[in-house]
Image (tube, rainbow, N blue to C red):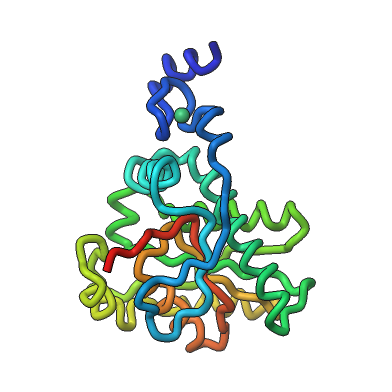
Length: 235
Ligand SMILES: [Zn+2]
């Protein structure tokens, strides 16, 4: 009844199964069981640090990501951000076993930026929205995290979709830079951070590696890259 009312008022349907009502119906939401795991692409881009994803990029997760990104279904930021938080949590748990990581040091979640023209066309910055939700979710779960949009794209960066792996890496060389005023604001907080690069989809890993490089250049060395979902690469 409530879903029917929502459909009447909002004209929406589930992105997973097209059932009229919520953007993500209860059965589709229940079927959405995250399986966070390392998601190394083949081949591995040079310099990429441990990539983690919460799910495979197919089915309902793919429909959610596209719906949120391309069709401005903004309410999907919450379930997608929850998945990103699961990936970040798993990555940090894993690193705590291996690296000199301090559990009390907060996480700095840095979203991979979209080109300004893309943000204008879409009317929102999807990855930043998901990353904000993930930071809230992690903090609420006792792992303090903050989303800071430190990165900007360089002028002239082409849209990555439609490029093959080789063209992507050429296009991406020097793709990102750290926004100096944001870095200064961050420095004023004066604490160490464990830095994670955040994205919606991990494809070749080249974007994440480039974002990590840009952060390395200012001394914020990311520990890992985390994404909602990872594609299965076809070589
Ligand atoms: Zn559904």
